[in-house]
Amino acid sequence: MPRVPAVAVADRAVHGWNPQGYAELLGVPYKAAAQLTPPELAARIDRILEIAQALLGRFDTAQLDIVPPERKRTIRDLGYHVFRVGLSFIDAMDQGRLPETWFDERAPQGMDDGGDVARWGALVRGRIAGWFEGAGPEEFERVVDVYYGPQGAHDLLERTTWHCGQHLRQLYVLAERLNIAPPAPLSPELFRELPIPDAIW
Image (cartoon, rainbow, N blue to C red; front, side, top):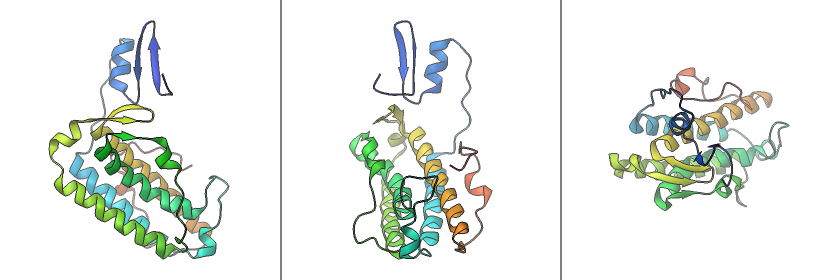
């Protein structure tokens, strides 16, 4: 097993985020929670990134240089990361794999202020929207080679959506610390029916 999550019992093992497979391996009952459909998740991730785009546009260069105590990256890199996470789903579907290195990327040179990050976010949202426009139902039945193990495309889309949402929550906390007024309060409805963690960090 290259890394967790994984469960091994005797000579049998299940690798990757696969609760149903783990339950079958252990001989215990399991009923998966209802998932939002791919079109619902597509709409939700676009809304999350739209709000992130509007919020990040309000940060200046000095504020983006700050490294919060809870993170090992600047706010600029966190802002870049939220869009890179969203884009990672499209890249993974195009390439059939999702390496961890994509999540280690930092904001490129020239992405100086919040407006720069927000403009890149707009390009990412356009690419994501275009992919979903051309995707058929069969796309979400595929299995992707993710760095933590194989994962179904529908599950990966759900994970990507709440991953972006988690970082948006963090950006709202950081904006509040810096007295940056957000474009609107962050509605709990944005995260409804997503398995997002309770803790923000």
